[in-house]
Length: 424
Ligand SMILES: Cc1ncc(COP(=O)(O)O)c(C=O)c1O
Image 1: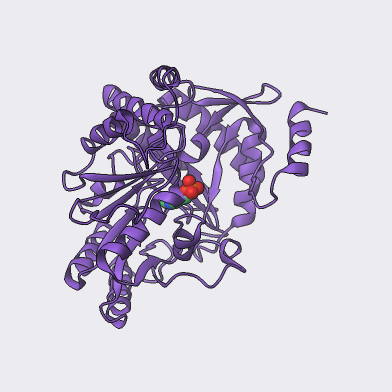
Image 2 (image 1 turned 120 degrees about the vertical axis):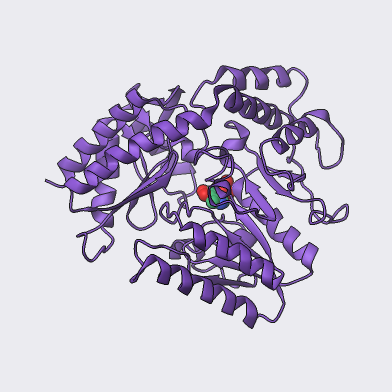
């Protein structure tokens, strides 16, 4: 029996069956943009540990920063004591985000940063309802799950939920009508829903690009329209940049691609440089809650904050956005060429290195081809490429942001070979 099979067998005995493993890849170690399995087979990694390992595996700056901090201690309980590292981290981070965001609450994961944003919006406004988008993913604890709307299995048996209304997101690829009609329809629904709730709406929560829902990039006018409606109806705009943030799209915040300023921002995944970290950002006029209204034990973890400072400084030193834009547009070009050649590729979309390939049964009816998608994910793994599914019929590419053109080519060659094999 291979080492990987043996580990999987042990895993099945003791690990919760609620986890979702799409392939039988068993991680042993990583180097740069590659990962190696328990039997030492090498793979190109187009998933980066679910959009976390943005500087790849084994980044020296991050490792050295963590090691240095470990000599002093990794935890103090920043919710109850002062310490310099978390302050230094937030001071550093604030130089990367729009100026109006000047206060931060620290936590440990995506769902926690959303949970904090939700509580902050309700605390600050004293209002009850929030609006989220259909097909969105914000996490799996109660406030975030109340907003999450991707898969049925994620919500089944968990009601009642917190007061959330879901409205349509501008998915222009599958909307039956023009882009303009799609935008108008979605914005009208949003406006109507907020108005019907009679001034009791705290915030609209949105992903600038829907991640788990299938890498859906909305039109600029939709995002601008959401901001306008929030302003007109006196509702906060909270954006979930857990997956799209930290240069994944070429800008530090994906929202910058749309020239829209959010009131509250949620970051996690890549920001910790591989260690668990969540950050909720807002202006001090909004983040004005009182001591005890929200807090935690591990937020501001010293090792995670040291890693995050090194991550941010390294992104800046490398001018990582240049590579994201260069390699991202190269990959989009190659994938668009594949789209022309294959009836089952309905759409290629994305920004920077957040790219989705949407599989259809045929280009005309755009019906979800999840069966072929699932087979290609498995075939890629067999051929030495790690990719993740997203949404009903999408394969997402969220590689480390340091991926070079040669590595992109090698990965895409495996993707093409796997696609052809499955679709022959
Ligand atoms: C946009 C978004 N928000 C929130 C989350 C939840 O993050 P976590 O799994 O760290 O709780 C995710 C995770 O994929 C995400 O993509």
